[in-house]
Length: 174
Image (tube, rainbow, N blue to C red):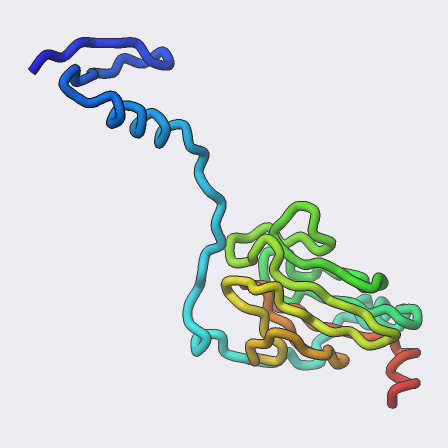
């Protein structure tokens, strides 16, 4: 078996001259392929215990909820890397996912690129899972779609959020 030394990308490699060109080409292609970005799964559905948050909203959060205009709502991140973040829902469709162009961007491998959408019809908001790998949960139940009610808990990947509607819309509905 004859070996010779060659320079590739400024590094010295040993090449076996008895290898077939197809083998060498496949190796080179595998080295050039960028790593693929994937969604990481976590646990089983039974591991996703539903423990509702109490009424432990801060005064600032309560003021933000009370200031919501009609036909709008807010998502409050309760746990996860962005805990405390607030997202205003004031458009007919809000996208949620790991894709940088998502309206609500969660940069975490437990979130699919296009994880879910929140659709607004009048003053009613509906969460629609977009065939995410880890699923979307409302009040501890995995859902494909669900109408969101005031105070509902959402789980998207490892993020737990609470949904709050405008007080003006609650008064009209209630």
